[in-house]
Image (cartoon, rainbow, N blue to C red; front, side, top):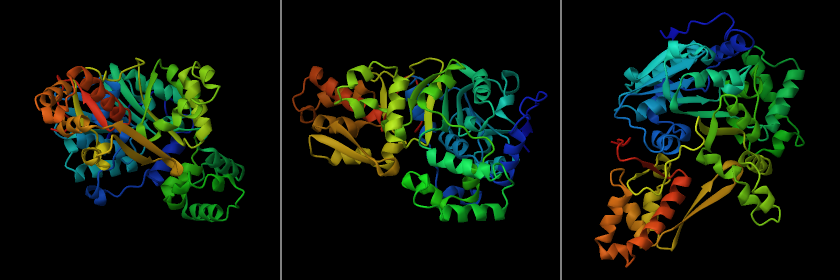
Length: 445
């Protein structure tokens, strides 16, 4: 059994919390089968430790020392499992907190299937009840898809911030306002029908599916069909969570920044799968409006891009108390390593076999939109990429290239280093390569 938080009177039991808890007891979210756990490890860009280190700790998160991680509102365990698997061989501990005992039981069984019981502590309760006295302090906090379901998201964020170490970081996900336009129109329809928060019976969900199947071509759901294609295969827990949840609010970028400001937190960076959709320069750089737009606050520029694309159904990002926690990629003593994302799309092999002057990689983003990554890749860059092993520093690799005239191509060190640093910057900007400080240990040992 999981231990419970001692709740202060009315702290987290008021308002919608009891209804939300009931929903997730009846329909644990997301649906996961522990018996199939070992078939694959679900990747989360938000929770890749090497990326968190690069984006949030300046490459200095040393996992040879005990680290504490909180998964707040961990549900059926996707983030908890992914984090625990990465930290299997390190002295780190994870606290998984969730309202739903049934959801948490699924998460626990998944962890047991992987033999990781010793990595995770379980507590049933609301994140609103987290305090330093009952939970301690954490290096990293994951809270994905939770704050937007609270009656007071700012209070939830404040509770998380109260247990964050001064130099810690958070990985957060909240709903995006503009990309969910079709969802909120359907939610309003169902609210007017008196169905918001209704008991999630089999009959209710069957009738909901019949309604969705006969939506006319004029309904906004069909206007955003590519964006909302995932609804076609949604299971019961996902469909109810999407359209009938008791408490659901979404944010534009500027509203998100304002929410973070209530806890004196800064938005560090969006995750790679959506970063492209926040770049106003991509849209306006050839426009006479760009000189003025470029002077606007970054959040306003990002919201302009959000409105332009209209497809951000969620915002996934990292936050911390300092505004910039990224590693400095110009430090030659840093150690580069390939990311999990780069392994999934075979970036290293693709670069090594490329014979053009520029290596390109096409990514299919949301709603069929394509993004192309370009990296100058003369032989010296390919040689550098071949030697990346999460053990050699940038300087180590440069020295090895210098000692081999066949690899250095006649480049002097003064010419070679800017070329290599630009390649590193391009790859790391798209989360294909991460850097760590030499005083830390490799997550891939």
